[in-house]
Amino acid sequence: MFIDTSKNNGKDYIRLAESNRVQNEKGHKVARKTVVLNIGPLDKFDDGQPDYLVRLRKSFRAGEPLIPALQPYCAEERPREKYTFTFEEGNPDCIGTPKLYSHLFLERILEELGLRNLFSSYKGFTKIEYDVYGFAKLLIFGRLLNPASKIATVRQNEAYHEKLIKDFNPDNVCDTLGFIAAHKDKIIRRMNTSLVKKAHRRPEIIYYDVTNFYFEIPEPDDDELDEEGNVLEKGLRKMGVCKEERKLPIVQMGLFMDDKGVPIALESFPGNTLDHLTMLDALKKNIDGIDFTRFIMIGDRGICTYPNLLHLLDKDNGYIVAKSLLKSTAKEREWTYSEDEYEHKGTGFKYKSRIVDKKVTDENGVTRTINEKVVVYWSENFEKRSIAENKSFLEFIAKLIESPANFRVTAAQAKSLRKFFRKEVVNDKTGEVFNSADLKVLLDMDKIEQHRKSMGYYQIVTSELELGALEVIDKYHGLSRIEDQFRVMKGPLCTRPIFLRNPDHIAAHLLICMIALIMMRIIQNRIVESGLVPSAEEKGGAWTAGLPAERIQLALGKWMVDKMPNDYYRFLNTGDPDLKLLLDAFNISIPNKMYQRGELKSIKTGTQIFMQARPVVTSSQTPQTT
Image 1: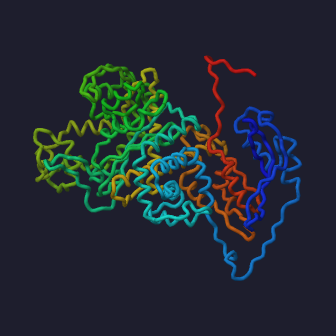
Image 2: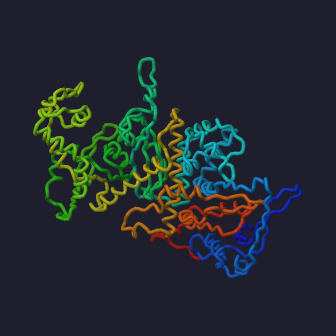
Image 3: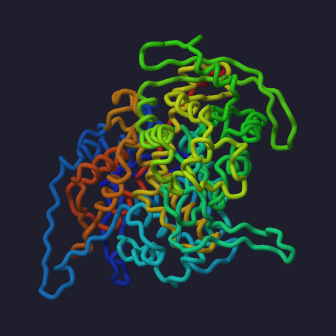
């Protein structure tokens, strides 16, 4: 038996129902729902606290119902059902064939993100004949549960309790990738609209960072040129600075993420695009049109260019970004290294800040003056780490200065030294170094000294003049969360290496991975919100994901059902600690019993993905009375 709801004249009523399998006139077994007890209108019992129906159902299953009239119907009050099965030799049921059930839970997340309705409506609008939503589910769930190639992912259709696609042509997977690419902006907009409405997303902070993914191909893509040699379209897979130090073509990806670690949007760029050149286009395409309240954009040194930052200011938003100390002016570095005004000196950490007037140029080449707060800090631990990371380089420089003619310089070493060469003696065409004995003359020792002196220091600039220096530093350090999401994409979700070649298919693949990441973060956030794991405060202020992505992936892969005779089913592995944590976080109760098909579906339909937030009454609002 289960708690059901119905409507009468537009009003919600609660009732107790049970589902049974009966034979219809054709001899087929079908599910029939029978009302056991009409309880009454929902508003008569609702205590005003969040998730009343969820709590009512959970209390009924636990034998302690919130409504006393339900007590006689609790499982503990009625005779336990007994199951008798007969197996005959040769019957396929003698050998278990467990199927994944977790996809029904994942379908609920997609529904709440608005993607089922979006895919269905656009399928009808475009008159697509194949099951585009089924293929999309296969590709997205495959990333979450068992990442593989696109063709191998399609073959996973048989692994699900309910096949995601009934009849299909495997070639339709490419059609689906094309559909996703063509509707990328609409898909991103629909998910964000749903998260604003259902998850009450109101990010005060948005993080932006760039990573890249490599392709195992021998040569980069050529640009498409016209007859006069002008570039019509740049190739996407290009040689660039690979984050994983692979000498392979890459594609750049810029990712926006909210202050709960949930991705907002992504944009892909040719692999040789510099990080700071990605942000402005990505902002205009993905963020400007979303109905967000004012936010502060946080980014690393790679995006600190004023056309980017002024665009944010013009949209009435703010920024907190790191700025390279070595690329600052001599006066800015002098102020940084001066001991004057530093606070917390002698503690292994010191900081100071000031507000400056700065002349900058916007994207249209117009010079403007802005007020900006500059925060610099020095950390002893940061300095030690920088020295350790540059140990071999510093030792190399010391030996070179002492005796430059005693060893040869490799091409890699010469390349790493170019930024320290004196401009007046560098060969601008080749930059080659032929004789190591001449290298000491070529080196600009002031640049090397500045590089060594900057170790341990960090510089942050912000539009938020009222924020304290420590608060600016703390908010900036939250940028590490987006790095965590990059690791999830490259780890459990296996976003790379990418074997696709069509640019639209590559864009669709990255979007599929982002959707999978959003779903992963929704699960992790719900686990944190459930209170079943230590909070960030309890962990000393460290950011927590609730449960690592790898363990969620394994737990979802263990959530299975096995079909028994007489159309009964049993769940597998629900006692697994990680799977139990996930189920408890979403208030999903799976008692120790056998299930019929209708009951399996009711678990999905009764699952609430987002916790309902109570409306906040501000001082300017007058509470309504009844």
